[in-house]
Image 1 (cartoon, rainbow, N blue to C red):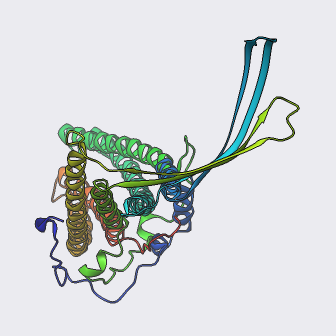
Image 2 (tube, rainbow, N blue to C red):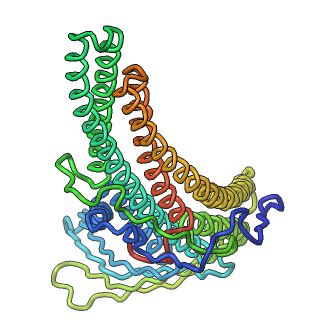
Image 3 (tube, rainbow, N blue to C red):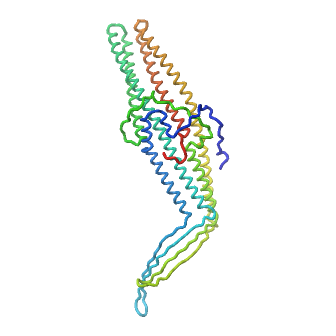
Length: 435
């Protein structure tokens, strides 16, 4: 394997993971929503990408069976029949013969070529199984993220709809006040503009929620339908940050396991190509009977034993080229493994870093929302007392509306990032588990 394909593992993450929490297999249950649990189970049963991955496992299993069978003797039944007519001194003679028999053949694996091919097929089977598990992990994570996104959009839409109702009441009051000259036409048109702005955002959120539901249906293998109500976004639990070491990541990511098995398969294929330079020995045997004419009750017994030796002398460089290609494929698999490991470490580091920063952002956003709620109260009191114009209250309403949406979006980002973290850490994966 190339020297520059090696990966140096850090001793710890740059963002330390607190506690000693271990990841369970059904990690999505920690969000605490039974509806999400049911949707993930449905996705793992019906998702099209996962069903395709399962079919690839069946194909790889059949290929391994075929590779193993190449090391075993073969036994075949054969029969031949002939009919002829000859002319002699006494007239024409007709002859018919039938020769049934058994034929056996076997290639002793003197140099390990067939064994290496069988081992390569076995590694490819395990790689396909790991790929199936990686697809299952991705499907579960995508389902959880899409569900969280849907609940976020629904909550944002509810905020927008509540804001529309309050803006409609405020606009009706402003129209009455403008008729009596309490506020100007400018202030009235500003109130109308704010209402239209919120109505537009409500339509955008409704469209986004419908598209999110369609994306969820696709993950579930559905052509459409409805998503039953579950917990609101604010009631979903934020799972704890798991504690793990970088060295443990190599054993917990199915995509890394897949790359490792493909690397091992490439190594065995290279061994088989090297063995192709050595002589091949084949043994054969056959036995049967020769029956001449239909009334021949004394058939002849025919048998044979044989062997052959095939030693390569000259093939125009075909074997050398095949060996070079196998070496290059082994190197490609080594670099692919290195890339999978590096990508996995980056995934975990990014999720850990985002986890702490998003928590701080959410804290600041919640505090800002509280400040803006008080600010709106002050603006309303100043307007009622005649110390400020209606535009000041409109500004306060607009700022509070955006702050409420921002709190929901950050909560969504926190939950989605925690899902990404669990996915990056392998989601409690174990080799050869069933999805």
